[in-house]
Amino acid sequence: MAASYAHATAPLRRLADRYVVRAALAIANGEPVPEVVTQAFETLPPVMARADAIGGRIDRAVIDLAETAVLHGREGEVFAAVIVDADAHGARIQLSDLAVLTSVKTEGKPGEAISVRLVAADTAARTLQFERVS
Image 1 (cartoon, helix red, strand yellow):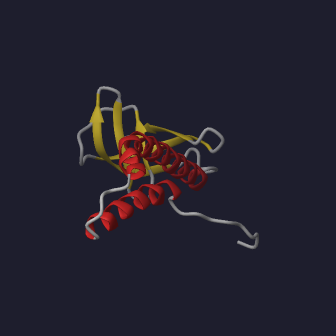
Image 2 (tube, rainbow, N blue to C red; image 1 turned 60 degrees about the vertical axis):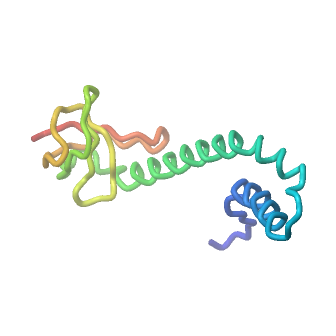
């Protein structure tokens, strides 16, 4: 990338780690854990859980965008796939030749090989639509 930018990896995780390190240092040195650290331990779990949830949604959105970008313009093509999970709403499939995990409205059992046709790859909405052909 030619642009300059600042990058900070997992700043909230480092915040939590800061309190753990302070507590560990106090205990290792035979000192009481500072009150500010004790208070943080009471408030950090919900903050960290929310941050992890947001991070998971961001990860999923990035993967969805990458999958739609890879398949954009390939509408109408048929792909080999394997059902990895199924429920009353349809099946979760893994395309055999591409790193794409998506859903299709069909019945089947995990491990079953099927063929699907790409109906739509919408990069703006980050959605894929497949239909089962066999």
